[in-house]
Length: 79
Image (cartoon, rainbow, N blue to C red; front, side, top):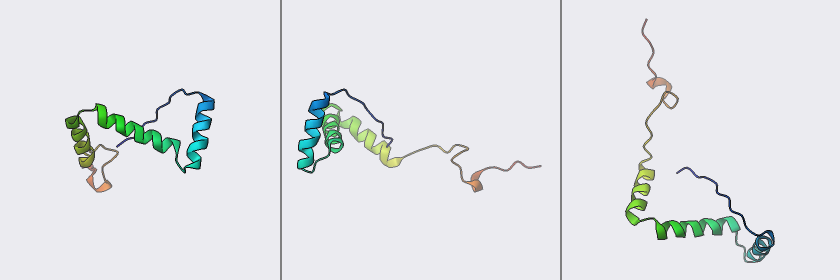
């Protein structure tokens, strides 16, 4: 699944303190934020939609384009 970045504004001193105390517990801010977002996804996105997204991700269907075809699949024009 393609990942995208997000940006949020947060008080600099609060972030610094959060990082400092999380570091003492060997925790990572980014990892904890990802866990929180996963929790929101599970809480707010209906299960049938999550199932569909998971199914779509597992099948990873991507139609072949000229750029993604193997060299052996590219048609050679006849003369």
